[in-house]
Length: 224
Image (cartoon, rainbow, N blue to C red):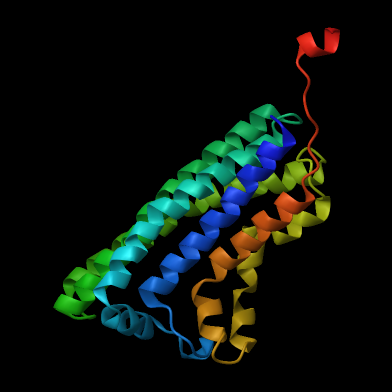
C-alpha cells in the first residue's frame, strides 16, 4: 500500500479517538477537578445531562469506532511487510476489541436514560453497569494481545515507525491516568474522564507523523 494511504488510515484512528472523546464528554463531561470523581458522581452527572447529549453520545460510538477500525487497518499496514501473520493476528485482536468498545460506549445513553427515569440506584442502572463491566472484561485480553504484538513488532523494527513510539502505546499510557489528579480545575475532570481516548488520539497522531513507509513496487513495474 502507498505510504500516504497508510498515513491516512492512521489519521482515521486519531479522528476516531477524538470522536469517542467527544461522545464521553456529551455523556458526562463537566469542568472541575478530577479529585471529585467517583461512581456516585458519574451517575449524578449522566442522569442530569440533556437528552440530546445522550442521543449524540450514543451516535458518537459507531462513528468513532468506525474510524478506529480504519486506524487498526493502518497499524496492520505498518507491519504487514515485516511480519504479515503476526500483523494479521494483531488486526484481529484490535478489531474485536474495537467492536466491544462500540457496545461499551453505546450503553452510556441507556445508562443516562435509566438513571433519569428510574434513579441512579435503580435495578435498571445496576444491570446496565453490570453489562458494562462484562464488556470491559471481555475486551481486556484482546487489548493486551494487540498491544503486545505491536510493541514486539515495533521493537523488532517491523512496524516502520521509531522504536520509542512504543512508550506511547495506549495500554501503557493508560497506566498514567492518575496524572490527571495533579491537574487543577477546570481541566482535571475532563482529562480524567477522557484519558483513554486522549492518549489514543495522541498515539495515532505521533504514528502518522513518524511513519516512514516504503512503496512496494509490483513485479511488473520492477521488470519494466
